[in-house]
Image 1 (cartoon, rainbow, N blue to C red):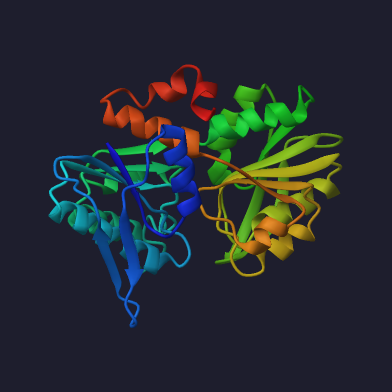
Image 2: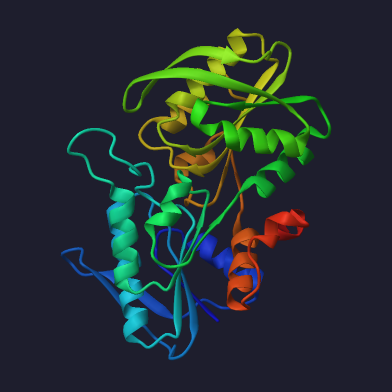
Length: 318
């Protein structure tokens, strides 16, 4: 078993490497002067089980191309099996035709990864479960819920909580976490007028005097979360926080979160934090390195990955 990484999120790759007590494969992933991607592996990997770690986050196209070139280099170097470890799967929100003459880009990216030479995919909290079916190779979708619930338990130490889904589409995720925490559940009913703009319409559930925790998979512009936080406070919520797996936080999202009623936004390190995120007073990162590292070890050992969540999930988060 060997681990390789691109440039999308090297700190996470190094944390996974440390968890597994296994050095990263020596390789160069660099650009020519015209920004073409070039990959060169500096050690023998013939017959090895290789895991290449690369989120396809901003800049999405550059990081995706890096992943594809890495996979091609590994295939041509005669690796026995190559697993693409994609903590954040970009283009996941384009999982269906949203209108006439629009693409299904999540499927296109799945085809590209398979054609580039991946034998298996390991990812985290896909935006839509059906994306697993876009791949014609084995695909494991991990869940960040054990990491998030463990932190919530430590942070709130038995205080009564209400888990809130910021939209109807996230109800299943919010309900699962609420069940684990033995917490109440509320739902935000919103109307989205156009992409990137959301308007909170109604709150389903009683949040008056409650400590509310918004739960979602992706925070991009943060408009939905901030509007939801305002609506919850207006409805009498005592405090509002948010736990989100993938902190895209593009454009002015960090400033928007900082000026919102949210006490805290907690994200994982599936995407490398920007300087603005690191210095923000109310944004905090949790590491998913032990979770992904444990899944990688199980895949290499041909052991069950799903049992990671069925029994003793705390063992998977360190």
